[in-house]
Length: 543
Image (cartoon, rainbow, N blue to C red; front, side, top):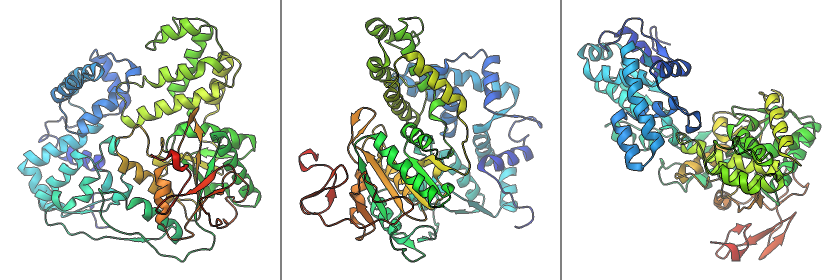
């Protein structure tokens, strides 16, 4: 590494720049950078009161800052959308900005915003950059947001050569401000830029790469390329698609496969179960616990620690105890407590979950709002199996008390977002239904497809993709991403092993027998579609 190179995150580099040029930035020499707790303390000092059920005010303000949205612009947008919660948040944003400016301190988001202003307005800083920093190398460029791109453009305007390394097919953070178009249209944002496409994959078997290519090529907003394998195909490695009657059967099959994997002498830490949202995990956790298969939660919050699960337990208790005061923090809860008072969870769990699921905190992003509704549905299915709300509430408290990172030597249970950048010898992708992948509440289907692509390419061996006919008490259909793999070469994707014992994580898959119009397998039917291809949906049910 060259002597004196600046190495760090965007925020770390910006902090270093601001420390050097604090006078030019209008900051005191020993300014502080407030963490989330420091921001909340400043809220209190500034007289800002905020209802936590409306979301995290720190996150709301941070997202506005990252997008270079001023308090006035935030308020105007909230008014236009008729969102009273965000309008209140915008008012608090204005008060907070005045308070932090008076103190002469910064928060995390300010680091990039202030550095951008410094680079744009100060000739002295521009001269320093021109003479000191000739090259800027940016990794994971596909996840940059607006303020970060403008910051890099400011460096380029000072004469720095910007080198960006990105995989547009792994851009997963649009809900957090990232924009894949900065990568796809890189030469527009950095005129004269040269592009080099790297297509060799060093992790996956050719069969997995073929399946992944078949899915991701359906995206329009991407750099056109075809991933190529660096190693030869291993016989038996493929993507296996299995369908089940319920999420419980799906979970039991996954747990049984992992138990066989463990008994065959394989390391469980070499396997992972990935899912779109953590609402899929409770049934899997329970099935693993029943079979004494150790697991760890990789980068995801325990389902039992989610506030919406605690909220459902609280509301069910209020209904059972006919306690309207206890349920008063939920809109329309008075009606359900009055009309269903005294009833058990078998009757109240679903309507109570729907009521809470429709009321995510107003300030949360779309990704969190989607998880909120899914988690309520998943918790309702579990709650309905308890004879009383009090017993369900005790179960939630017990599980939350035990929640931890789990066993590091166990199988990893992880959301796909948290699995990015990781790899395992075998991967299960659970919950491959049309309502979860793409998620029914997402407005970016291409990002959802990228998530499935990322899940597939975490595996150095085979992939088992599973889906259920019923989940969260509702009928489900298989994800369209499963059928998109049909164009992969023969043998790369195997359909229809169902919920029998024919394939396990530790054993090679057997090719499916050819089908005529349809073929019965372990619990469901594989249908031949007119014009070619296969489907798990009967012809009469196709859209």
